Length: 190
Image (cartoon, rainbow, N blue to C red):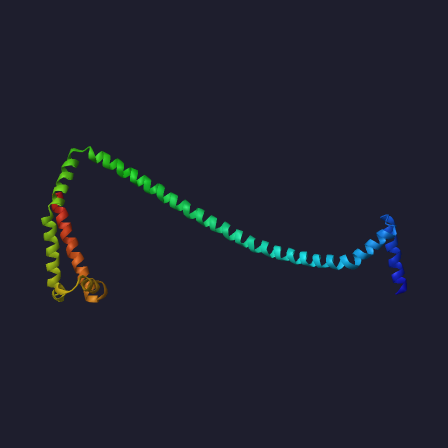
């Protein structure tokens, strides 16, 4: 063991000699630094090593977040691209409709047809008759509907949306109304 210490001292002496640290004051400062500063340096080294590990872990987390954001950007770009394609298709169809409308408006029968449709739609009497006939046909089909005449709007709405008989009554009324409107529309065109 004494040879080990002697060997270490000789190595230290050579290092000090190579660095030209030969004054007593310099050697005293080195010994002082080694006895007080070295534990502090070791502590700082440990703290810094822990900080490096924490920063590396944070870097990994951030890399995962960046990858998630990249995936989200890619997905959003694809969605936007599809939306742009749909928008272009709708614009194309709209332009076609404008062209058809312009060419139709040049036809002399177009203005007559618009006038007839406008006239018929402003004549509310046939529409009211269609609605009244629908109500009467519906009530004939389901006499329970007569009991609803004294009910509140909310009760009637609840009956036709929640109750099975009410739903079938509403479907029947819709089919009557659709048939009457179809007949009415055909009468406009004639």
